[in-house]
Length: 430
Image (cartoon, rainbow, N blue to C red; front, side, top):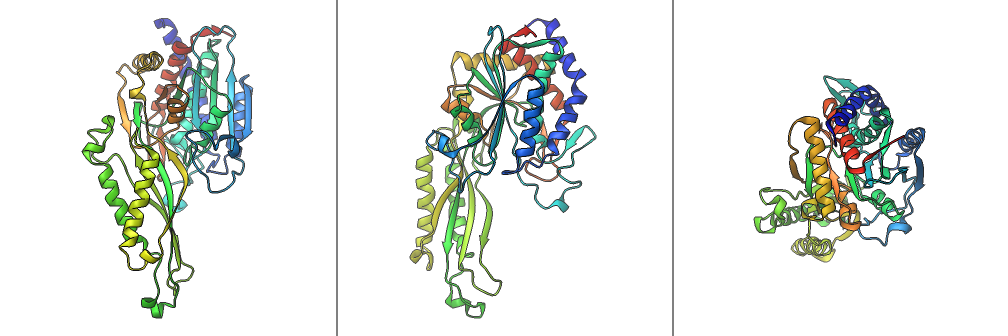
């Protein structure tokens, strides 16, 4: 791409930046936790329609995707799990097609009194935008949209088809991105601006969610010795799972991209429920667990070891050996994905185009990083033969209190994305 066009595109990003932050503030104000994404998706659909895109908004049907590789099990029927895809159709079809993917769902805010200000009343202070989901990852949706807007500002459009995806379920299954593939939305490459500090993600871990159900023997607390406490029975199982976590992180078990990371795979006891009455020995408990796996680590083999670990620990417990726990899988059943292993010409060209766009925008070489989280990139890379570039702004406290995203980082990501689109897709006059 010539320098004059690059300069014009970056200038257009600057011209529209106040509008971009206003858009991001509006989008962040929609409390789009799982099951409540509808208002945010309606807003996205309206914005895409106003830009002349053909908009597809649909309710995800589990039956349409449950047989596909990458599907993650759900405990119940979806309620208003809606995806939105806006399609730009090129007139000339001179370039390479592109998916611009982002997720609209956000994690719960937690206790509101632990936020400095209400999480869904976004505000800007000292160069940061604060609010739940502002960083993870509504800033990415904004950068995708306003990168396209920067081209429109110059009366240009991508010279190839571009699919703008706003999906649900990224935070718990990834089934929203899978539903896009099932609906036939494919392209030559995908860009996902998750908030990983303006670095290109070369590898990401996989994730398994499961529940452990335990049953005890209820009795009055005065006779607690004659009962079996289903909450306390979980403690040795948790200890055994952490020992498994330690084994999986051993140096000889690591994927090459994580060779120098001592603890890339994290086990998290995310939730525990149990009992019915303070003065009764609890007769039941359920623990919700998240465990990570490396790229290339077989999910079925991992599940076998998880279950063996739990049952072996249970058999060493005086009560549990006669009342073995039940393991139920729900939510993430996600494989790891390594872009670094994609040696195709398409992947190398996409990476090169993004590296060039980043260098032009920032004046610095693009850093690469392996991350200890998962993203929707795996669906494109593993199941659609599509290189997926994860590259987004700097954010802090994602999934925590006072989540925030840096404004100047959004500006840089938007600029680099616009340059990448112009290079990868080419441009045509509107």
